[in-house]
Length: 143
Image 1 (tube, helix red, strand yellow):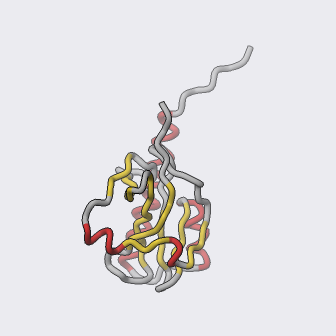
Image 2 (cartoon, one colour; image 1 turned 120 degrees about the horizontal axis):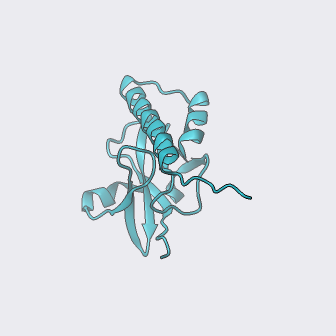
């Protein structure tokens, strides 16, 4: 069975604050989605965006100065979570956890609330690594 793939098309900053973690928005078949990651930084599913007020908050990639870390061409269930981080009114970083940590070295977090959110993401990333290690299939030894 072929995995459904979703492409990054924009972001939502629900509070309008900067700097702030934002929600990446994905598109597929002319519909819009948010990634769902339960307890880890692995995508578990994609939830359709149906609320009119959420639709109004979407900022297309074409309207931002996007900075990309490690970003896939498309995402599916099981992919690494895509992190969005809006550093100012025009600039949004997108990348996986590794590239996000590298980005933070030159764009440090400046608020306590955001610092707590980043630490929570890092904790989830550690859980993801443990989860993957636990469920990896062992390689068969060659004779």
